[in-house]
Image (cartoon, rainbow, N blue to C red):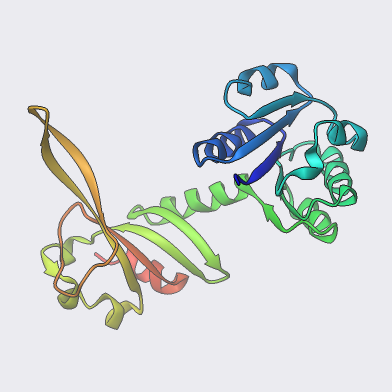
Length: 229
């Protein structure tokens, strides 16, 4: 049986969540009070309903209580976000994920029993700051306070070396999870550029100029590695 999700609030964040869930083969109940947003997603979502999600009767009328997970992507209207979460909890929905715009907002959602609080704007800002401070950092994901995974362009001095020769673990206390390489291949009579991800790198794999390393470790060690010339 397909997993069933309710996505409440169809701004850019909510729309993207709903779109991705549908692509993954899930059933999605999309809810918003704005008729224009409902029309925009009606051809994509399994069900698209215009209603007031703070109204328990309205949610029950569209069988929202039957979903496996509810995603509350209303962040800007903090009062509505809190009321919707409270309503969903009272309806008995077991798993709720909610978007928050401030730490206080997130703390209230957590106290209401939300399983996970998402801070999309804050997280995007953190990723941007890491790229600005260390231009070699292409992507950043915090795993736990002080630890993260980063995508880093290969430092010039390591280009042409095997992983065993680069000694990244020994010198920087980082683990290499994968190597992304740009390759050129022939497709239907023309050369196209493609990306190949080696997710099981061996000590004998060579890192080359233009490659991207996916590394995990402490942030201070990652900073040192990213600033390595």
